[in-house]
Image 1 (spheres, rainbow, N blue to C red):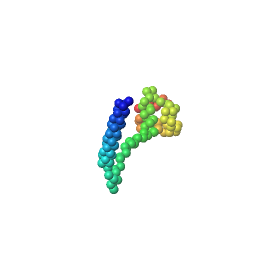
Image 2 (spheres, rainbow, N blue to C red; image 1 turned 135 degrees about the vertical axis):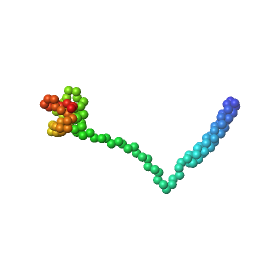
Image 3 (cartoon, rainbow, N blue to C red; image 1 turned 90 degrees about the horizontal axis):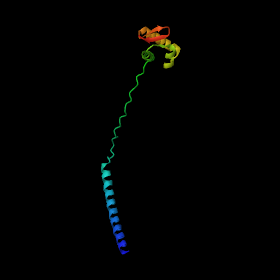
Length: 116
């Protein structure tokens, strides 16, 4: 029983020594952290630059219709163009006529348009 008591006392003594060492290490760590933090001066910190988002280039309505017509192999009619673009009848008619005048598309049959 005495041996157990002496062993416990030696363990207790070792724990107290370790506690003191950890307190000393914590104080040193605090000093190092304080030394590394920048001192506040009157100057404002530089603002971080934001990543500039690239602007999307808009494709014109005629460019959209032309791209759709170019992708088709057999040609497209106005109903298909209307469905794929979401444009109205009048707008599709105007775009098709303008593209035909420019020579970018041609009509094979009535209402069927292919790449020129």
